[in-house]
Length: 114
Length: 113
Image (cartoon, rainbow over all chains, first blue to last red; front, side):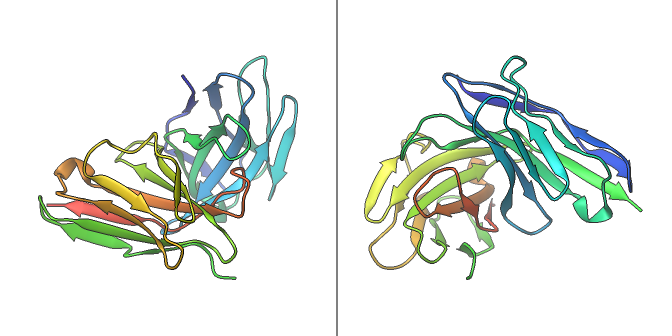
């Protein structure tokens, strides 16, 4: 079946540190891949996405590359800020048209210390 | 443009009672999705609706759960005769048409005593 596995948290970093959150997936067909972020007390926000192999999604200094050969979509940021503290969810969608719900990983909580 | 709205934000019910969760999609969005997040778990898809139609309910439990999205008014997720295992955060998302761009609400935290 289709599934997403992401590294368990919590992850605690100092400000300006390099961030990597690993995400691997299992899917039939060719999924689209997403990273969502959830700030405390808020809903999920789409952070970035990639729809085909070798695509790189980027936003707000975050980036992730769709790697078909390793079935991965790792999230990276070169220099994190305190304001990046949140829970990050990796997700995939298979199917086209009006079909295809999102399948999420369990989330990784990131805490950035000043 | 207001985002996706959910109410109530917190709901407490005793076992056997009914829970009604409401979701107002973003203006202009006619597609609504419901997800459930159990403690220490990721979000799990429940149901996908368009106005007056259920498109995909493959993630809905077979009993006690139902959803609707009427022509007028919010989408409603209804849980009858709640049990403690229903305690979770329920998230609603909406989209204008393409499933890729789903905008999420803040969620309703249901606690069953």
